[in-house]
Amino acid sequence: MVIKVNDQYLKLVESIKKLDSVVVAFSGGVDSTLLLKACKDALDEKAIALTIDSPYIPNWEIDEAKDLAKAIGIRHEIIKLNEIPSIIKNNPYNRCYLCKKTLFTMMIERGKALG
Image (cartoon, rainbow, N blue to C red; front, side):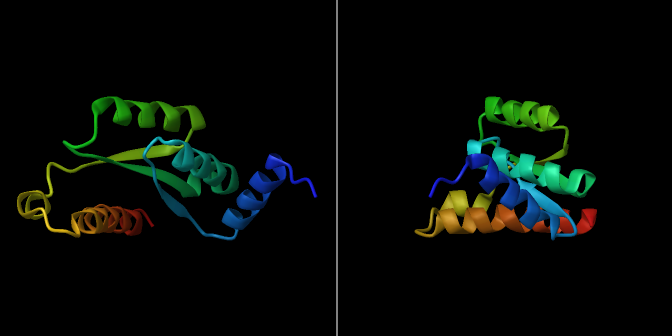
């Protein structure tokens, strides 16, 4: 059986259409860019991209995310995060989990605020 990539993309778009709205954690990488484009195609103005800008992310990555969101034509917000002090200072074994939890909690809160 041959499955065309376009068929899979259309299935993704149809699945997203079942949602009321979405916020995409957008890094500007291949995966989040594809998802963002699908969300834009499915929900148009009800899809928003959020990108975290922190001292640990190179400026060129933020600029690339901005450019890609603009090219897709989707609303894009940057959440500025100056630091995650306790995680960096204490460097616990589960620091990656704690950092991601902090970042996604911020994005969820912003998504709720946006409706």
